[in-house]
Every structure is written in C-alpha cells, then in structure tokens.
Amino acid sequence: RGDLVSAEMLHNMYAGGCRIICFGIETGSQRVLDIVKKGGTVGLNRNAIKMAKSVGLKVKLFVMVGLPGETEDDINRTIEFVRECDPDTVDCYITTPYPYTELWDDADKFGIKIKSFDWDSYFYAGMKGNVPVLMSTDKLSEKDITRLYRKIRNKLKKYITV
Image (cartoon, one colour):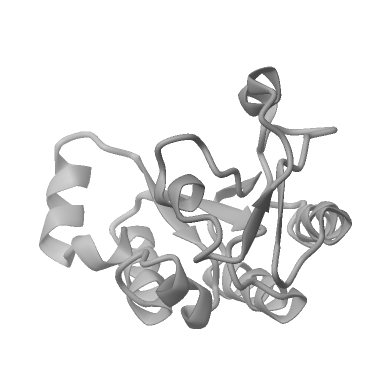
C-alpha cells in the first residue's frame, strides 16, 4: 500500500536485492477508495510509485473493476492514474465478493447483488479472458462491469499482464 512505504524502506529493499514492488491501488478514485475503506489516498499511492521508481524498483499495480459505488467516471480516473504513474505492469481484476469478506457479509450495505453461489465460478473470477462477473452493484450492472473490464484492459494494454 502506498501509505505504508517510505523512501528509506524502498532504498533498503533495493539494497537488499528487491527489484519489483507491487501496489494494490485498486482504483484511481479517492471516492471509491473511501467507500471500500482501502486506507491511504490516491496522492499517497502516486508518491509511493514515484519513490519506488526513483530507487530503481520495477512497479506492478493491481487494479479492480466493479468496486462498490464505482462508475464509469471512476474507471476513467483509474485509467488516467495508471497512465500518469507509468508503472511497468498492471494486473486487472473484476471485483469478487468472496465468502467471509466484508463485501460478502455486508453486500446490501455496499450496494452489491451477488449473482452466483456456484463455487466453481469463484475459482476463475477476475482471471484473464472470459471471466465470470459474479455480482452487480447499485451503479453497475453485470454487463457494465464486463464492458468496463474490457475498456480498462484495452486502454491500458501496454501495461496489462493478467
């Protein structure tokens, strides 16, 4: 997480042989970060990425599509954020409400409607290719999530690995 690193930590990591760091930024929208209680801020994430790159670390980002409260505008913010930060790679996943998580337990509070309780589907959720969308939100239908997943992967294809 961007709020948990410092320049000293990153220098020490590099000196110790680390060559890549992964940040689960999830989104470039502060509003959505707040909804999902991610901690930190878009600004802290931006600074952490910049610091990591400045010490010579490769940077991998993890982003999500279909987070609670997310809209197409938020996806556009994520695309802009990633382009601005220019990481080495990005993994993109569809949000999935796994059992025993807050998204599962409090789905109504987050505006989530769980579509499938077929546990075999959960193994493939968020993986590359034809992935199942196992929920909708109060802002995005299953079709919207699929369309926006394709959009973000297309707009960021130079970075995408998963």
